[in-house]
Image (cartoon, rainbow over all chains, first blue to last red; front, side, top):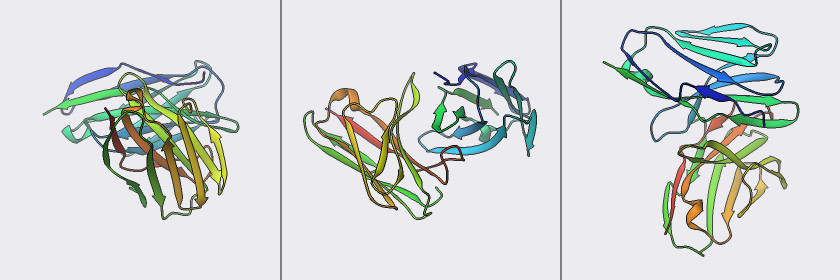
Length: 110
Length: 112
């Protein structure tokens, strides 16, 4: 399976600190995406990074992709209580739907 | 939620009864998906559709069927609900198979 696996499963930090979560996958991909899910809600797309990209930024989010190691990381800088959520990576391959990992639960303590 | 609605939002049913969940979109996206989310398993694809009357199975399709008679509607049917199908069900849409997906608010289903 090409399913991404997030690490750690859970992360608790203080407000203002940076949060880093990682995603590893098994097979070659076209793109890797990160999603956020607030409690009781549907997933919301955060960022997409293509296989030929190494780094991408969006506001306080920084995503890196290392295709040689089949891994990606999501960095949230200067975290806020509102960043408390679960974060999922999703990978794809040619002609197959996205496959989501099991997620990292982030708690940001005010 | 990007023009996606799910109905019902909550349902309690008994083992053995049929259940149909509806996903409705106003975005005219080609692809529609049904997922279930369970603790410890993350999000798992049940079925997806790539056009009217065009559907394919996902990772956990046993016990589920789908239909798409109009671009905007994607129905998920549990022919005979079992307790193992207690879950939160999410519908999603996308313009293409590997593009960004937009999720509905979810349906909480409890099978007693």
